[in-house]
Length: 467
Ligand code: 5GP
Ligand code: SF4
Ligand code: MG
Image 1 (tube, rainbow, N blue to C red):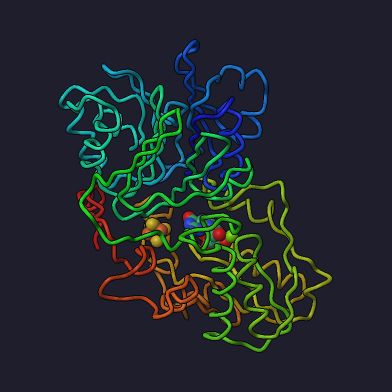
Image 2 (cartoon, rainbow, N blue to C red):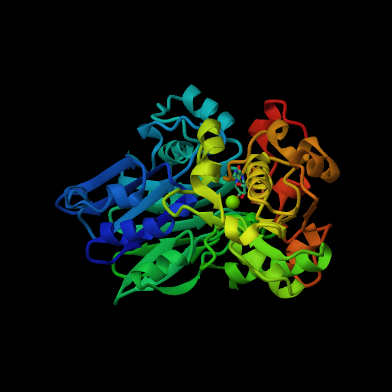
């Protein structure tokens, strides 16, 4: 998901809509905005579909007045797979003794089931099936006298990954979980305006200046007169940022941890070309997720780069499409072979990841149908062998190709001439860790590749998931 908040600006809702539009790649199912204005009180609009289709009309935007607000773009992860109801669309709102508050959450709470059970037993009435709603109910039960303190109480009980933006009538709040699994950045706009965003690309679109990242375990509270206070409400933990944000999830024009996402992806291609060279005529990306790595691969290998596959720009991310059927159809709706270019050539096909293997197989078939002489697959991440429980929607282990097969079996299954994945160390080097992965103390979360979960997946373990 993607989160965005603004305070101290005229017409916060239009900044938020623009910000969410720039974060649309993080969630395409639904979006919502909450604002506060002294006359209109709290107002919210939550809709299915794209930001550009919902939050551009004057009719909707004029219902969201005020100089403070937050927003969210959603795609469903663990818990509510593919069954989003409008009541699951964030931000969530709660009315407390000291006034209202709204929250928007990116990540996934790994002990949400047990928290929900406990809260329901003690009288909470849940409105949605979302794990994030627990935060509001935990805040309601806190005895603290202001909302930031209640949020701290609530989030200390929450396990997993969270980057949260929240608001009261006068304050914008941003928090990252102690390991900082999901991103969150701070920007400045105008005289005394501040914004919080999942990624820096959303600062660019509104002309905000990047100030800094919110640190792992940090909470910032920004009041409407431009005063910012910071605290560290959690027990200190080693940072475990999601390495898959660098590989796929974030936009390539964003800066994460002071590093260009594009440059990391290009560098992955360079590493791949060193680790897994092959004689061929053309390096082609699976667009758009494989493009920067293919550019790096071509550069390092000296083999020409070409657009052997053309993407229909009017299709979203297949990855984020919750239904299997549409995802299967999606490949042809979205990608087509550039026949004239690939005919009789030995192709190196570069993609970011193999998950279920459906995309890869179809693309390979399309290339061979169009007359490619050979197809060599190079993948910009290690084999995805484990599900993510921290906010990226990977399927169960039995649907993950790499959990079922060896690399050679996968090569046969996909029926390609060769198949190689980047090593975990190569990926770390590309992400700027010169010495590679520290196996005793990994610098990133890489659980979907290594099976080493930095936060125990409490609910999943209770359901019988085996590590
Ligand atoms: P596959 O067809 O192997 O399931 O999907 C791999 C391709 O689709 C990659 O290009 C990746 O960008 C995207 N993708 C589709 N579904 C997922 C998913 O659930 N997780 C991840 N990490 N990538 C996915
Ligand atoms: Fe990111 Fe993978 Fe960790 Fe999930 S399991 S947070 S996708 S690195
Ligand atoms: Mg892709």
